[in-house]
Image (cartoon, rainbow, N blue to C red; front, side, top):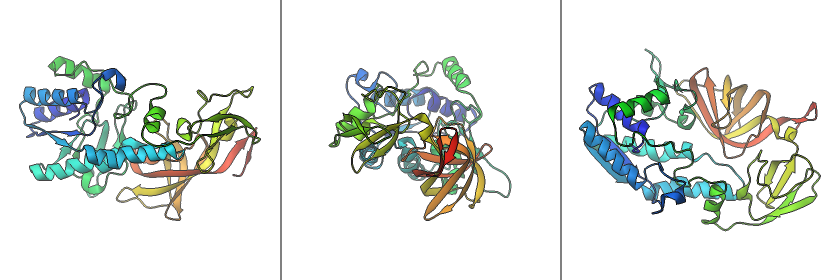
Length: 362
């Protein structure tokens, strides 16, 4: 329980269904005393949110416990996030957090507390059919679907997971929280990372505060130096705003070289690639490669048709049509209609890239 609307309503619906509920909150991060430093109210598991989670549990009549997992969160999520940005990647820390901290710890705690199942406020679903392993699926509210971040959940977890909100919409959940007058029902939504906060430069400033950064050149598509920067952590593939230079035409970050700290700009057409190489691939229980799938290359990406095949120790994804801004460090997740087939970490874009009106090989 994060103290927010979603986990509070999930707990209420479980109580309505007759479950014997125990509330658990993980203390993951120490937040500034000034809420404005984190972009305002509603950070995940901030002290006031822990208090709200306890108030919800008291209101609904079940026990609540808070467990300190700050060291684990810093080691498993925050440090890799900082290192990835400093090396020119754009990581997906929410996937890492669910896999290595939140769900992993909740299952350990469930066993300690004697709980048969683990429930969260994620907008996702578990599809259970006789004679087949359970399958993770998209939530009914596509605008809030979080199956992307849960792709690596193993079968043992899926057999015990419950997502009470999976078949509902955010608006319905909010309305129910208000109707029940649950503590925190009027909270706004947190749109940023729980440990970074909001603001145009929040990510870059957070990274710079935690690791040395290296200045380098900004070059155009001909290799000419057109400016300089104070660290590749301030850039991501596809970025157009905040480049600090003007070259007389629209320009986008098309390449980041961490070895030389070089940021290369180019036309938007050069952002399109025909495929991606993945590492650390996790597949659903009954899925084998190669296969056809719909693939999302970032959270806010509409899945596109592709062919996924084994490649070295990971996989290669070849899209039916070129995809824009495939970014190292992000996660590619495979779907069969609504069901998750698996996913992996993007190592690099490959295959045909757009050049003018034609195609060229990488």
